[in-house]
Picture 1 (cartoon, helix red, strand yellow):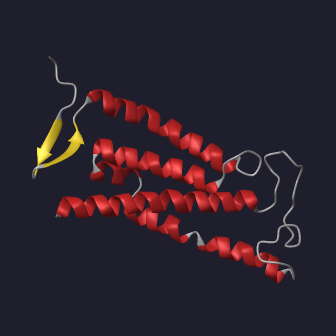
Picture 2 (picture 1 turned 90 degrees about the horizontal axis):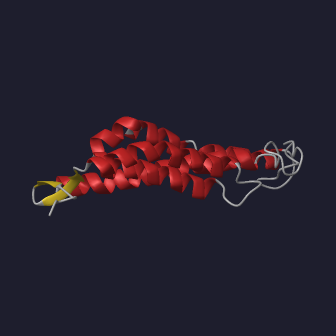
Amino acid sequence: MQQFWRFSVSWGVETIPEDLIIKTTARLMTPFIQLFGAYIILHGHITPGGGFPGGALIGASMILLAVVFGLSEGDKRISHDTSIVLESLAVFYIFIGFAGVLAGSLFLSNRAAGFSLGNPGSLVSAGMIPVLNIIIGLKVASTGKTLFYSLASREVEE
């Protein structure tokens, strides 16, 4: 009987699958997974979804690359330093929220802060909500990647 799963074993720990089908599937599917995550983020104000589910999908695709190709290969796609920068962009969420306060209204106020609401149901609508979805999506994706890589690299060291 042919063995379909071959694992490279080092330090007694099963690490990277050495299967051509898994690697090819992951290589082909990852761009589509990330594109769908971006779609969920960008259309979150007019359809179910938004920054968190779209960011979780993009983060999961980066974790898929790390699981299939290894931490070093996955880190080449988006480095740890880039991930830290993306996580720190979440501070703009607070700045956008304070735009409403500076306009004399509530935190995260939309119309009172001067954001154009556009036409309901169109892609360019809902004021600052699409911008906030993008910020949240980047934060969730980079945090998921950073957490996985931090936990996985510690396990390899031990």
